[in-house]
Length: 193
Image (cartoon, rainbow, N blue to C red; front, side, top):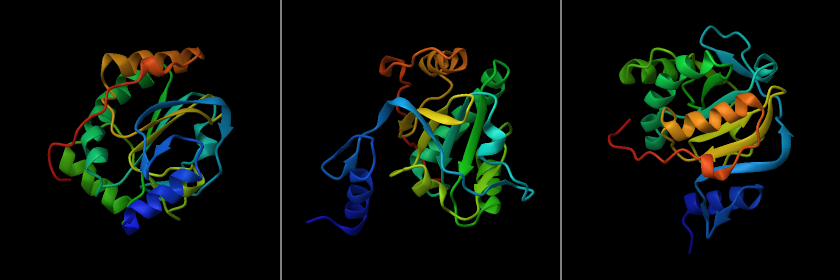
């Protein structure tokens, strides 16, 4: 018999185009057959200004959905922070979208605790992004083309500042075909958030 959390995860996973096995969502890199437009949701920066999908158009983007209570999310944030100045100089936006109920306060506190210096605060004020983007588990990272359409997603925490990640993201920037062999390795949480 499934507990409530497993039941919810299985229900969400069954409605998604992404792989799920026996109530668990598969982790790793999944490439979309065709680019998928994203549903518009109310995303704000820590000043309360709009910072959503419309502002993501024009360049490819990495959009990481995370929460401060999620161990793998917290484990990958430092790698995203290190990645941002390197890959943004090459033409890719790096967006960390906090899904905490505490909003910008939770994101700012997490960034301070982890020493995050490069990532801007982005918050889903209505807490609709997870459902709107078909995200069953956190962290999930969406890879978007310059039209802000999803071309791939990485489910689970990833080592975003490693060589595999850079190969994947540089292919995204160049508009090349992405391959699952480009997948960055999963990261394992080592401490509580």
